[in-house]
Image (cartoon, rainbow, N blue to C red):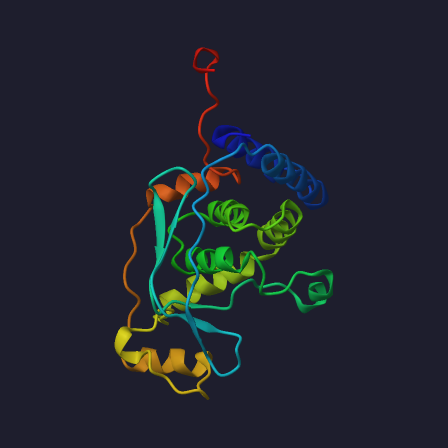
Length: 228
């Protein structure tokens, strides 16, 4: 499924009843994940974090750069960005899906895309699927997390829109990173707002959004017969 097919598929699915839409969406994503060719993976580096008091919210201690497949196009999540990793309901933890796993690094970038919203929500969710594959998550994990996020995170997207419009920051400024061990993010975020801390700007409509038009990883073209 290429980018154009993915767009047409989503348009077709969007006009169907919810139950059928969910089933067809599942089939489409499984097909895209299963048909991925071999690629030169750009594994995400280890990430350094500083936790807030409840260990639910974590501050990224350094910039993280992710490059898509074999391309030179990347996303940079800035140091100071605050994440809660994968927002997975506790009822699913017993099935092996918790906020932490091989998909955690991908979830940090997904959080970044949901906060800044430089791409559409559908593109952000497909980018999550791409990065989970390159993070070593199984196809089953990637599919289940993608499906849950894509079908159930509209309210989270909308709330983040409202929070940004209210001026709430999500990136801790370098001179505010030395917070104490008993500080909760919800309280510190309000303190940052009172201190006039603002999130650094990001590029509007960046080139990497195009990789969200399909949940497949960018690959090398198949070799021609003359090259074999």
